[in-house]
Image 1 (cartoon, one colour):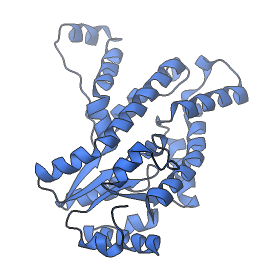
Image 2 (tube, one colour):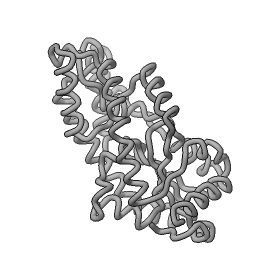
Image 3 (cartoon, one colour):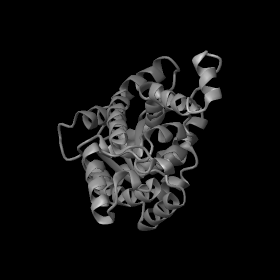
Image 4 (cartoon, helix red, strand yellow):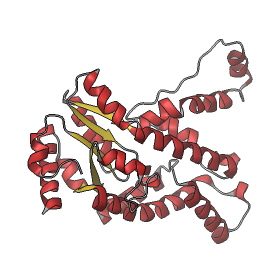
Length: 288
C-alpha cells in the first residue's frame, strides 16, 4: 500500500486512488465529482476498453447489424455513411451491446460460442487497460498537469486478478501506484442491484471458466436447447450468481491490497475535501 497512514494521504500533493466494486455503488459518480473539480484526472477502465481495445470490434458489430438492412448495406459498401460508437464515461452501452447475451437469436441472443469468444476478448482487454493505468498516471501529470488521479475500475476487475496471490502481476502493478479502495455495499444495496438488473437486464463480463460453468448449470436446471434459452432470463439468473461470487473476491482485494469504504459514505462524498476525509478515515481504521 502506497499510503502508510491517513496523514500520508493528506500530505501527498499527488493523490492517486482506484475505486472498485459492483456497478451502481458510486464508482463513476465519485470519479465524475472529482474530475469536475478540475484537480483530478479521471481514468475509466471501461472507457479505455471500449475505445482502445474493443473499439474496432464494437464498430464492426454495428456494421454487421446495419448490413442486414439492404439500404444501409449499400451505403456502407459504397462508403457513403459512417458508423461509430458514441461511448462515454457515463454511457457504456456500445460496449455492453457488443458483449451481448447468449441464447435465442429471435430474442436478441447470440450463439454461446460467439458469446464466450467475446468474453475472452473482454478479459484480455480488461487486463491491458488495468496495466495501462501507470502510463495514464504519468501522462495525466506530464501532459495535462493534473496532480491527482482517480481510476474508475469496472465491476469485473475481480475477474481479472487473483487477490490471494501475493505475486499477482496486476494487483502488484496497481498497488505500487495507487490506493485500492473497495466501495462495499450492504445487503440492502445487494437487493436493490438485483431488482434494478431484473427491470433492465444488461450484458455482464465474466471469467470464461466461470461463465462456462454457469451456462452448464443453467441448462441442467432448466433443460431445453442452447438456442432456445431466453437471453434476458439467463442473464438475470447469472447476474445474481455473479454478485454472490464476486463479493468474497472484492473483500480479499480490500483485505490484502487496499482499504474499504461503504457505499453510504461514498454517497456523502460530494466534494474533493469530503472524499479526502473519507479516505483518511478508512486508512486510520485499516492501519489501526
